[in-house]
Image (cartoon, rainbow, N blue to C red; front, side, top):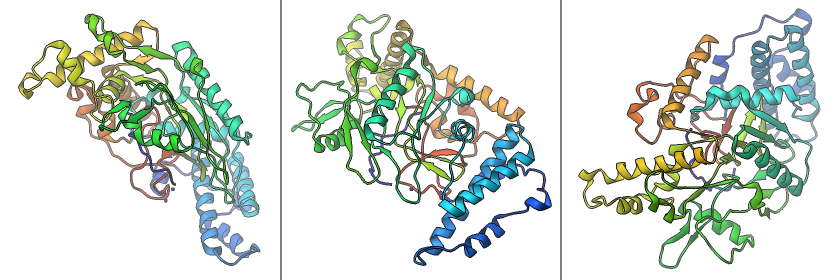
Length: 435
């Protein structure tokens, strides 16, 4: 379960015709329902618009939305085995909405299935075997930052489930032609702060320094700084200034890290939160962009141990562990990094299991992904993947996924980075499961 790298480009937006290669055509529509992109475009041209300035761009945007809506609805109605009459009736309503409002409102079924398919399509996630189990919360009616913050806290409690982690996504109101959409500016809803000191050292998560300084510029303060201070949530409503909210500590379940054999390991004072929630990706479904759609799952142990604790630009724990183990850190031949890394992973797995918290090791995750490939093959679907993200960051060559080649094409529905175009073919976004 690979994690998003930190990305602090606080700005924001893919033409994707490739996703249509994965959609088999429905039977031809009846003659009285024969409308297509070409005659939809003709309808647009005939429709009176108030301003001529930007008319072509507006038409192109509506045409693209209609095309993506049509493609997605074909996929939905085919996979759900719904009738072609239902499909054409629904597409007709979407067409009318687009002509009148330049956007359309998706039903809960369209939204919920789109969220699940977005997870299934995400090329960077190794946990896709469980895509059908995703809990989808429709919160499009919420209209204030306070309401959204409270819903985010509810998301955390629901997904944490006393350590029996459930995969959950919360969907807030989408972007529209009139506004740029709601923003949860945190790349990850739960994250520890990083404080840069005058001597260049960092207290806390070095990967969070830039975001920590950002929230400090908004007025957030922490008197007694530690290595594991929870960052506040930053929510920005369209046309408003960002607002900061402190997460209630009782909602955040954390696991203290200890080792099954080395008693000294607990002296490090390490701990980690149990719920990874990606919160700044844009979810694209059927031409609609959901700019606030926090998505959570469970951890793969190597993401905490091999990345969060071991990376030199995070907590950089390998030298400290190696020193305690009495390893020779002056020679690569001693493989001190590898040996220390194994013990870090052992400690994380042991600690989460000791507390009864859901976590998966990299070997099990690899086998699960191979099972996902077989299930998708049975359905006639090809699994697309970014090999560099699917292969775990520990003992990669010992896992099944290391020895497979994957086509890395990004299809919709999917999750995308805010600072890259949703209408390009380039790879954008990451596994919506990790932090």
